[in-house]
Each structure stands twice: as structure tokens, then as C-alpha cells.
Length: 572
Ligand code: ARG
Image 1 (spheres, rainbow, N blue to C red):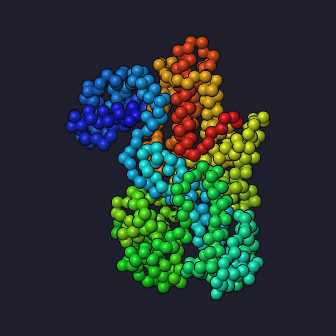
Image 2: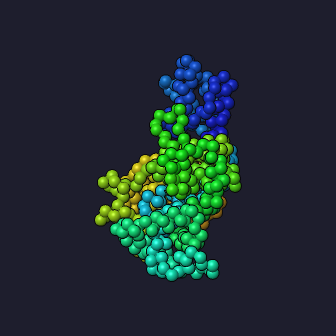
Image 3: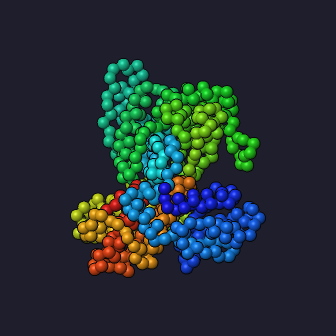
């Protein structure tokens, strides 16, 4: 348990002995450091609740504090200010030096199933597609650190118009292939396309289909056939999906994403009948489609019925999500399922979740949760585009960042390409996680790729500095015996805030508090670095204390970058 949490529990206990009922007693960093390093605002809150004078409550609390609270004082209208002794702080900080997990307050273990990534097979990934993997992966890692068991599924979009497009193009180029012979009985040939071939064929098919209604109706027909279970088309399409997954895997690997399951919409097909069986009592016909009411009396917005089967009998996105929920419950019985897509799917997920609970696809106590995110915009406030107004593909953005980063790098690096790639991904991820999950943000390339300021490269630069100090120190046993100066104290106080920061990210499912913390801690450290000569310090006690600080700061930054799935570099 963290020091702050331990003391918060202690305070809660004092309050309950004094017959005050509170959920928690947050110890906050002081807003006026001359009065102490920490403050409590609880007296004011209790005063309202119990209709008492906050100054009286504050004195009651203060009279009960043990000697680990020092320099205790009360300020009007009822703030309690205090510090912890250096001995107490150092004892804890040395524990953290031994094990980062002392800075983490774990919660009760539960099984969380995360659905993120969601790339669509045989379609290029656009900038917006990086948000789900970036946010989802970081939250998976954070959840693990905080004590959850997790399972992640990429949930590929492997059904849809793109299937019809590609198959119709293959048919055009190779009409005699057995895949297009209805009564063919022999072996089917294996497809030998590359991911690039798929891209080229998709563009060709699309170009033709938009101007040619006959072609478009063929595309639709093939797409519908796949949905109905046409064996030849499904055989063909599954191979195309596998080929396209090669590229998708490359992208997710670049983004350091780990998926336990590589399932998709196609995999849910087998569960559709069983799912429909459960939904049956609630389904009714409307305009030939099968729909289900999901509105509730308490709604203050319109929640329309959910279409489960289309008028032509075909399944849709919702059918597949419902079947997927059914299957996840059958196989894993998760405590929670988290979905990460953009905000535009919020109402959709609300409908799907309500239908799932109503029809009993999941237990009532399995929490189905959608975490939406905002759009990535250009400086004009509209969705981020290429210079000529086209859609910005993720690959193109990565190239742009690489070009911006390269001139800033040291000229004589050994593994230049690798460093460039890591700096690029750090730029991308840090920028993407830095604003509150739910809000839109403007992608400012120059600002985000800068080596200075609130950016990924700045944090990595700090780790390069820290690691170089640690290497040159030739020390392997780190211990802090004294808080040497105010700059060190500022760093340690910042570090004490971390357990809370992690919980806040988890509760809000937003990583911005970690990116803020990384920037604050890096800035404090770089200030310290400029103010003191660490390696040339002649007093060995002082030097060892400095190096203990360096080690602790590195440990914290290293573990936080790992949560964000950002790799470090050795030089840059
Ligand atoms: N492929 C979907 C899209 O591009 C995202 C999938 C999200 N997950 C889900 N279970 N629906 O919008």
C-alpha cells in the first residue's frame, strides 16, 4: 500500500472513532507550501454535512494525529496543513526504489475483457484508427498493474462491402476460377496475393463500382452471399482477410499492442442462431426488419429500437456484436467488457448493451461499458486531412512525423532508423493520450514532434539523460539517506502523488493524468539536473543521495512509459 493511502486509511479511522461518516479522506498536495507539504479539506466538507464549525472539526482531528504528522497547523476556514517527517518519507521512498509496485494501490481483482483496435480488413487505416489501439492498450496495461486480470480482443471488422468489392474484382480478372463455379467439387486453389495487391484491387473495384450500377449490385450481392454463408465466397474471403491481417498486425506491432485474441465479426457467425434464440421473445417485425425495443422510462433522449436483422434477412454490425457478447459471456464470464471506439458509436453501444441485458445475453452484474473518444482534427478544426484535402492514412502520418523528427536527431547515431521509429511512435502516442479521452484534439505536428515541451520526445530525452547518469555512476545499490534540498523535496512530493494519478486514469479511462505527470516530473528533474552537479559531487553521501533520486525518477518514468506502451531509446 502506498504511504498516502496508508495515511488516508489512518485518517478515516480517526474520523470514524470521532463518529464522522466518510468514504475517504483525500490527502492533497498543499496549495500553500509555506504551511506544509500536504493539506486536508475534509473539515469543511464535514462541517456542511454535520452543521458544525469547520475550525472545531479541524481541531478535533488534529488532536488525534500521531507523531508521523509534523508541523501540523490549521488555517481558516478549516484547512489542516501538515508534513511528514523526512524519516518517514525516506523509508517509503527506499521501498519504492526496491519495487515500483509500492507506488501502486491495487484494487480487488476482477476479469476485464477489452475490445479495442477494431481495424477493418482490406481497408487502409486512417489517423482516427490509432486512438482505439493507443487508448485500449494503455488501459489494458494500467488495469493489469492495478490488479485486474485482462483479456484483449482486436475484434476485426472482417465483414462488409470491402469483401464484395475484392471478390468481384477477382471474379472480373479470373472468371474461370473454381471459386466462381457453383457445383465445383475439387480442391480450391490457394490465393497468392500480397497485401499491396489487395489495396490495388480494392481501388480498381471501387473506381468501377461507383460509376457502374451493375457492378455495384454485383458487389452487394456477393456481400449478401457471404452473410448467408456461401461456402465458396467465405473460403475466398477468409484468405483475403488473412492476407490483410499481415498489414494490420504490422501496424499494431508498431504501436506495441498486444491482443490475446485475434477474433472478428466473422467469428461471431456461429453464435448468431443461439443469440437470436435468447432475443426471440423481444423481437418484432418493423418494415420487414426484426427489431427490439430498448428505450427506458428514465430516458431523456430518444433511444430508437435496435435493428437486429435487416429486411433482406441479412445480419448487421449489431447482430454480430450481440452474438459476440453472447460468446464472450459463454466462454469467459468477464466481470466487465470495455469497448473503445469513437464517440459516434455511443448511442449504438447503449442500444446493444440494453438489448444484451434485457435478453440475458450476459449476467446482470457483468458491466458492459463503452468508452468513446473524440476526433483528431487539423488546425482548421475539421478532421485531420492531407495537404490536398484527402483522407490522412495512418501510414502517411507516421511518415510525416519521421520526416519532422529526423533533422532534430543526432547525426552520428548507430541505429538511426530504429531510434527514428521509436521517437515517431512516442510522438504519436504521447500526443494521442495527452488530451482527455472524450474530447477532440488538434494534431499539431510541429508541436508534438518537438524535443522540448509536453511531448513524447521530451520525456524520452529525459530518460536518455537519466540512463546515462546511471551508467556513468557505476553504482548498483541505490539508497537515499537524506532529502538534500528543496528541488529534491519537490521531486519526492511529486512522486508521492503517483498512486492517485494511476487511479484517476483508471476511473476516467483516460491517460492524460499520466502524460501530465510525466511532463511535470521530467521538468522537475531537468531543473534539478541544471542546479546540481551530480557525477562530480565530491561529498560521497550527497552524491549517493543524488543518484538515489536519479534512480527513483528513472524507475517511475520507465514504468509509466511502459503503461503508455512507449519504448525508450538509448540515444537520440
Ligand atoms: N470495426 C469497427 C469500426 O471500424 C470497430 C469495432 C469495435 N468493436 C466492436 N465490438 N464493435 O468502427
